[in-house]
Length: 140
Image (tube, rainbow, N blue to C red):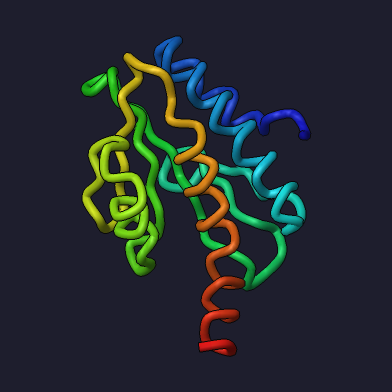
């Protein structure tokens, strides 16, 4: 995994230590998941002032963003594209993981252990979103 981009490192200076630790853990899961799914490297950037990851290969997957706020320091937010069914699928598969609005936001509790399996599964579904949709259309 490459070093984090400077804008991400700069942003992290304003995050709490538990949020920074969670970001590093999630970032590692995201890159590992992309490698295991054989979708190629991820682009890592800031979108709307939040860390964001997306496969570099076109028409592969969608963007997964992360947010943290001093106003809600105990929560780490994961955001998916609201035009996808990813949050709803996560709510169906992992009903006890975080506060999930079923549209685009999953809020994880930073006061307990991160649900690594659920996060990795969300990353896999997000980064392979267009591939799985294409496969479903051709098979089903």
